[in-house]
Image (cartoon, rainbow, N blue to C red):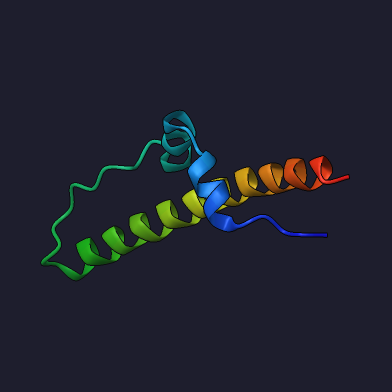
Length: 72
């Protein structure tokens, strides 16, 4: 079994798929100079990062399965 290059996956992504990965980012309207605001901002960034990573991995898994099934 030969695994396809990850760059092939990235190059295969359409603008629509990239937009789906990004999703609908949550807005932040807090004060970064306060500890509560900074904590809230960090939570927003970490949450968005997690969701984007999850969506990206789901697409990659689907793409990889298709690539490997085409090798048979």
